[in-house]
Structures are given as structure tokens and as C-alpha cells.
Length: 210
Length: 322
Image 1 (cartoon, rainbow over the protein chains, first blue to last red):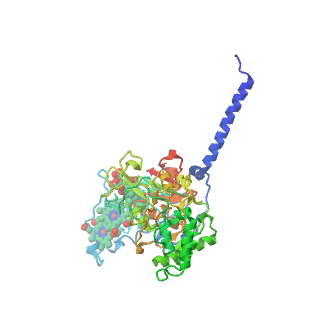
Image 2 (cartoon, rainbow over the protein chains, first blue to last red):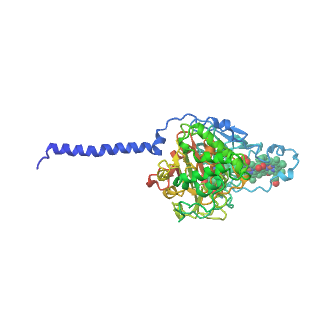
Image 3 (tube, rainbow over the protein chains, first blue to last red):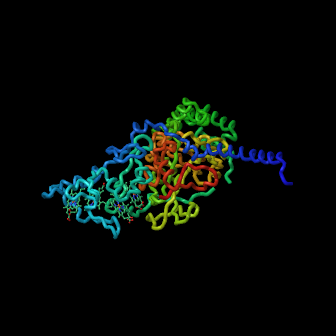
């Protein structure tokens, strides 16, 4: 009993091998079926659905975002044509207000619900005082109205990063072809950025559980 | 329980449409000869010439004997959608286009749902109902949104029938629909192979091969499937005219249906209607095989989980919190 016969050890080793080998083989085989494995194996894929761009469905006025995702360019909808009071310089040019419907579009009543109590924002945290058509970051970089993501991104860098990658905000039009995303202010009112409560669009009936 | 086989009615069916309505494909499988005889007899006697426009019976006759979609040649697919379009014109007087767009190569569709972003506005549900021609009478909906309290993780414990202003503080919202499992239990349960997974990962139903046994519905652990207990009704002006054979084409009574990732849109490169309609960006859809896609970014950088992962169904639908 001092020493096991070597044949017994060989026998044990072989049995173990017989159990382990098919087991791992099955695991590898099954893993290949799974979505996770398919994803990890996927290399750089060819540009899918090239017809997507041709098929249309993209919004009309687009600008290329200055940032890129994985080196790929992407686009966003313009904002200037959606901002009702643009151009601001038609009034804010140190001369008399000349706009026709000035009363309707003036905005002395604007409320700012952004930034919390400790760090209240003012109009000129964002808007450039002497050039109202533009924004200005706190470091003094002048930003075009169409690139509002650069304004918000200076403070909300986590959301900006997710927005570039695609986890915050949304893609518009197509999943394939040219990537177009909604800009921050398409969803958030910059002066009161939280979503407002409202009624749901529809309602559900009880689910018949099988 | 409803008997599977309806005994022949006292009055013989007047038309093939009539016969079809009365017997349906499930009975057809059971008593093919009988149904064929009825239809044949109807065709021979000419039915009711005033009521039925010429050609309708012939079209229906051919529709009855078509193959499972998966076995059709491109020509046969073309022929059946042309017949269906003509039938829609004859029976409802509307022009529709039914597509048979094939899956795009190197595409595997995946979906992610951001639990932090969803506010329960249910615009996705509304868009889905319109896009997919869902039955308005029974209020069929593919998507369910549940209002959940912190800590709850299964929709079973959430409130699926809320109707008040949303979002409610300290609640989150969870949307479920067909998860298009890579290892789908519904596909295995189907006795007639009327449901299967396409190469681009979409689990589809061939409505005309469905016998309405509802085994798939019982097999699905995610309540992803909907059954037409009655003839679905869609107001004519609301019918989405651009359709797909495996997608939103009009169903009839006794057919199983479910989310198809809007196959009629997604195969053309468009986003599914729910994703397009979502006002908060909680819904993310894209190609899992494309490393630059949004869905891949989410899988890589966010803490994702799937429902009932232990069942091994391998759904292509991830939830995440950011």
C-alpha cells in the first residue's frame, strides 16, 4: 500500500481525460452557437445594407459632428433652423429691435431650471454675450448653434461620451448606412432640461398568460 | 375547450373564402380532402357570380396549396405576394405592397433597452400598433411596458397596466417584446415549422402555415407571442401599406403573430418603428456584427443583463442601466 501501482494511476489519468476532453469540446461547440460568442468572433464587418442611404429616411439638414466614434464620422440634425428666434442678431446687435413680431419672440420671461442651487447657471454661461448667435464655453471657445453637443459636453462629459458611442440619445432614420443622431437639444430644453411628466400615449390590456 | 375540428356546417359554404373562414388551415390539415372537395365544388358551381369577382377563387385556391415560405423559390415567393396583393385589392379594395426582402449578409440584429432612460410614455407601443397592423378590436400590442419599483427585476412583479402621468418618481419602466432568442423555445415547439429564425436573427412566423395550436405561446417564457382569437380589425385608412410577407401583412383569425423587429423596415436599413418613435432614446437597435454599432457600444461599456438568462434561450435583447 505504499505506492499505487502505476497502471492504476494511468487508468485514473485516462478516465479523467476522457471526462474532461469531451466536456470542453461540447463547451466550445455550444459556445459557438451563443450570441456572445458570435459577437466576439465577428471581425470588422462589411458595410451592411448599402442601399439604406439610397432608400432615404434621413432628415434633411445635417452637419457632421466634430467628434468621431471608433474613427467613424457621424452626423447630427442642424439646430439653427429649429430654433424659433434664430438669428438672435436680428435683435441683439446693440441697435433698435427691428424684427416684425418682436413682442411675440422676445423672452424676458424665460426661466432657467438648470444646474441646481450650488452651481446656478446664468444666460451667459452658455450664450456668448456679444455674439448671441453663438455659444461660448467657460474656457472661451466659441461654438456654433449646430454643434450644441460641444456646449453641453463641457459639463456633461459622461453623457457626451455615451452619446458619441450611441448609449445616450438616439439615432434617427436608419440603423445602417450614414449614422445620424439627434442632438442634445432635440430632446432636452437647455433651459429646463429634465423631461416633463405627461400622460402615456396609450394603455395596455391584461396580458393573457399561457 | 374549443374543438380543433369544426364539424361541417349545415349549409355548405358558398365560396372558398367562406370555406376558409369556416374551416381554416388547421382543419384543412385534418381533413384536406374534404376542404379541397368543398372548394373544388364551389369553383365548379361558380359560386355567387355577383358577389365574388372573377379570379378571387382561383387566387385563393392557389394560396391554399402554396408551400412553406422557407421552401419557396424566389419565383414562387414573387407569385404568392402578387396573389396576396391582388386579393387585398379584390377583398378590401386597397393597394398594398408586400415585400420579400431577404436578410442582408453579415447582419445579426440585436436590441438593447435602457432602463434608466425609459419614462413609460408608451409612444413605442402606439407606433408599433400602427406600423404592424395590429388588431384594434382586441387591442393587440407586441410591446408591454411595466412600471416597476426599485429592486424589482422581473416584469411579473411590475404594473403592466398603469395609466396616469409618467414618469412616477422613484419608479422605472421596463419594456418587453419578442426577444428573438438565438436558441428560441417557440421554434422548437412548433409542430408545423411555421416559425423559425432567419439568418439575420429575426424569429418569424409564416402565418399561412400556422395552424393556431399555440404551443409556441406556451413555450415562450417572455410572453412574446400574440394570438388572433378573433378576426383582426384594422381601420382601412390606418393600414400600413408597405408590408412584408413575414412581417406586418394582414393576418386573419387563428394566426399567431409577434414582433418581427419590423422586418419590413429593418431589412431596408430603417429602424424599427418602436426605436424610431422612442422620445427618450431608451431603445437601441443595430447590427451585432458591426463593431462600430450602437448596440456593440452598449454591450461593451454598459452593465447589461438579459431576462431569465438561466433558461439558455440566449435572447438578443439586453437591458441595461447607465
